[in-house]
Length: 176
Image (cartoon, rainbow, N blue to C red; front, side, top):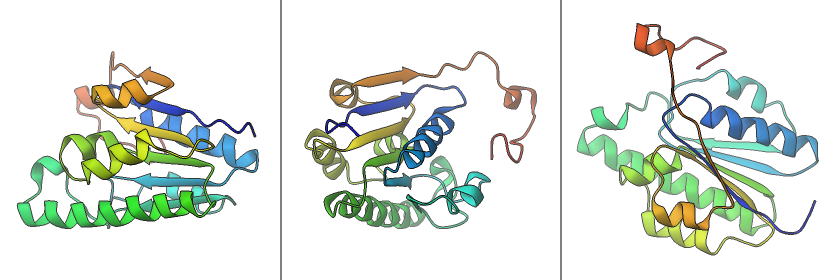
């Protein structure tokens, strides 16, 4: 592995941001890198968790089961969500600082940041001062300018068509 880690952003309104990040996690784990995936705004069971837990070198940290979408949360649910997100972000950072992470994926961190469901200052400070060796991925819609300024890769995934627009719900193995 080269010593210089870069910052990736997968953003936009199209399907595939998390899918791209998880693909990179598999590639990195296959190369012997230690991967930590921290998922924000996600609590429902998704099929990728079944396989990720079987891959050596991949650790997944995520919210509690049954988390509602942020727009439907009560203030009490938002506060609980903030606490869980802070705990998971700090745990991911601790794994980086202990040398147990070469690739850190912060999945949907941009949405958590935009919805004020994460310690915004902690995130910005970590991104702006990340360890030089760390490869960092952030996903979500509408990244702040400071995020794209820090990034080395910015990939925008644009929705042209999506089955949800026709009333087709998320399908196991494809969207969930």
